[in-house]
Structures are given as structure tokens and as C-alpha cells.
Length: 345
Image (cartoon, one colour):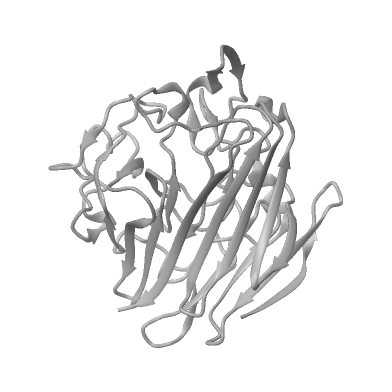
């Protein structure tokens, strides 16, 4: 394994941003920038042995600072949505930024996705650290979050999340990579096949906030327990699909501990990615709109050109007692792992 560090640009505040190239013995590689701890490239072999970059991304630091699609980023302190940006903890009410309709999304006005992280290379891994002070985006507690990226000889991305806070706080972090297994410059992923080991979703209201119920996937467009194309039911008139015209839902992953959660594959390229996680949920998001910025391939990404597999706790968990807790107690250690294993078929 070799890791090469290079310059990626600077922020408008003058902070240097670096790119890290992690390459295995077979030449497959990933690239990560320390702005938002973002996955920038994933170059893996297709069924013919040709490398394809299967991760969407942008061309400049200027665009990364402006974009709000979170390309490849680590999102936090709380990823996904919180209803009206409000929660109570230990009898104290908190009001967070409203940055997605009436709700709080992915950490607020300036979440971890839009900050430069501290970086270090250790034992063939990239270690990125974010120091988030008490009161940042109005979250309580001085929190340290470390994300360790690894890239294996058999083409597996490892993401290890570790965190601790000096006060009780809330935490829900994810990686927001947009996948297109035919290559990031190709158009639709509707012919990609998807499997999700989930018997239920957390249905949402019109603002994409969970109702608090669990909806069985049996007989609905959300039943991916048998591998089928993403496009098969995306035009359904189901009340959870029709208003959005896409998937943007949290699936309740079966089992506990580190286990297989999802499989995404493309017959065209012959590339498959298998997602393993110890998190209770996975957000499946099919990009419903085209990009506002030029992608790496030199053009604008159209809608439905990518899909996200965001491992996470459920959205708005802090406001639903029946959801797994996202409270991180003072002095407790948070640790979570997600793997994306690439192969051919």
C-alpha cells in the first residue's frame, strides 16, 4: 500500500487543502481530501480489468466550498435531519440552524463537511481528526471526532469513526459518497441492482422527517430484500415515493454488529460494492436533481446519475424515544465501522 499526499487547493480563508492517494499493489486506488474528509475518487477494475472512477465529485476547491450536496463528505455533528432543528437534552432545549426546508440537515450551516480536518498517515491508513468546540452550530460539548480511512489489497474501503465529548451531546455521522458503478461521467443508475437487508423503513412526512413508525417493506417499492433494479419501482404512486419521485429513505437494517447491509451492482461494468456496517440504518438516496457544479468528467451530473448508501442512525432520532439513541455521554467512547467492498461479477 502506498499513500501519496499532494496539494488540492486552498479555501477562501487561505487554509491549505490536501489530497491523499491510497493505492494498492494492483493499482486500484481511492483519493480523499481533508476538506470535509471527503472521498474524492474510487478507481476500481471493471469486469474487463479497466479502472473506473465510481465516485462523483467536483473539480475545484471553490466549488466544494459552495456546494450543498455533500459530495463524498463526512456529515456531522448530526447527519440527516432534525425536525425544526430542535431537541432537548438533560432538560435543556437547543435550537439548531434551519438549513433544509423547515429542518436541520447534516450538521447545520457549516457542518463537518465544509471544514478542513487535521490529517496524519499512520500504519498505511489516513487518520483525519475534527475538533468541534462546545456551542459550534449550537451543539453542546467539546467533541473530538476521528475518521480513519483504509484501503485494502482486495479493494475495500474501511471507515472507522471514533469520538468523545466532555459533555453529554448527540452524534450521528455518515459518509455521503455518491456512487455510479458505470463511472462518474455516465448518466443513469436506474439499471443498477440493489439489495438491502431491511424488513422496514422509517416512513417520513412531507419534509422528510420520520413519523416515528416503522413501515414493513413487504409489498412496497422499498422491498429490496431480493436484488432488483433501482428503477423498477421509482415511478411508483406509493405515498412515500410519489411526492419525491425518488428514494430518500432510511432503511432499518436487520441484525446487529458489523454485518452485510446492502449490495449495489451494475451488469454493464460488472462492478459490485457490498456495504457492511454496525449502524442500525442506511439512507438510500437517489439524486433527484442534477448538479449545479461541473463534475470531474467535465460536465454537469444529471438527476438519477448516482445513489448514496449512507450508514447511520435513524433521522431525527433524538426526538423519537423508540429509535436507537444518538446521545453520546460525557467521557464515553463512540466507535463505529463501515466497509465498502468492491469486486466484479
